Amino acid sequence: MPVHPGLLNPSGFVHAGAILWLAVHAATTLSAQGRGAGREAAAGIPVAVNLNANFTGNQKDGIIRAVSGYVRRGKRVSVVKTTVTGDQGRLLAEITTNHMTL
Image (cartoon, rainbow, N blue to C red; front, side, top):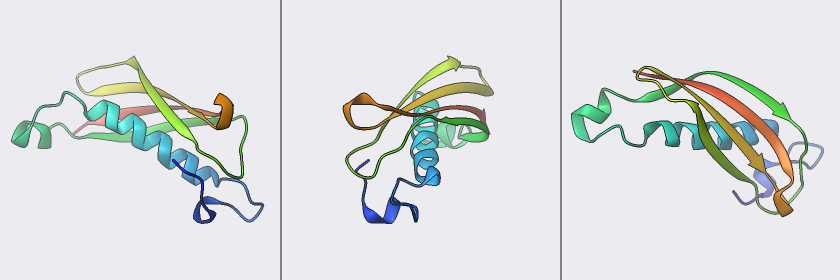
């Protein structure tokens, strides 16, 4: 995600909420993959129901990236760990989310 002025907090760094949004979006996208199409997919929409975030850094410009992977993939509840990195692969945050399939 390109960093732009709308993502910055008053101190000039990327707002924590923007980092969380990117992480939850990546994790939910992962959880939604392979859920089928049409009516079957509508009956299996993953929703984030819990999250834990550890912020380790930040930046003022450049690009931030999120990569998600399963800790556990269940039929109803999945646990996903997402790593958010900045320029030169610098760790910005690690977020663990629980997704319930509705």
